Length: 320
Image: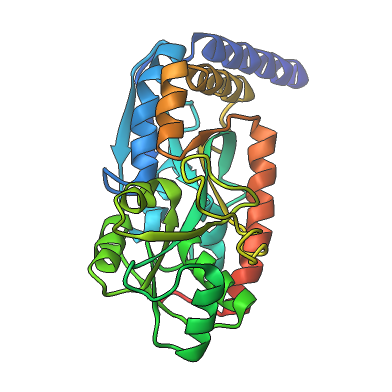
């Protein structure tokens, strides 16, 4: 009798789970962003959310929970009920967090269910126009001649932009002083104002300032040129092929979210990003739509965790 009751309970649980997945979504969906409004991830999420809402048949709202380099928002979703109504849009930084934060309230591989990549963007290394160099070769020569005297700004300690600067230093044998800022806006302002000579950040962040001439782009951190900056060499062309960095923006549910719900959200993301107008708007900002499978995002996370962990250790990056 006990075994029969156990089997009956399991069967009822499966039926309930299936019914829940079939009715999903039945209410508003919340995308958490671990940064204040106006940053690159926030902008992409807000551009996509109306189309995602149409695809899912429910409204999709953005919930900004900034702080601690984005980890507060990530932890909020990790501890949310795994019912498909709370998800985090984060970036390659998720793979870096365990290497730079001594104690995290979540586990990278245990606490999340990958859904899909949304978009990819390279990093861009720029300089203040007053710096007397025109290309990477000249920058390397100047940095070697003035060790420690050039400041390289990034959008924050331990982020992908910071690690691009560290990777550049290691690959070129240069001594550039890293100066972290609390986000893209202050880093851009400081560099345009001449307080830093170099700045690394996501291409969408720096694109308008390069186009206006306030910053000069030296290379994009991928193997081919960016369509929006056809005159800017790739890392390969600039002679720093190993300074390769692609920043993906991706969506994750809490772990234990039913696979049927993950698949429904994945399908909604694909449908939203197939919209011609949305694709054109994202591409115009330098964010290339790149929806895929949950397995592909899981593999990307694993690969980036290993890659950037090696850079963090080699550069001795530590957060206070």
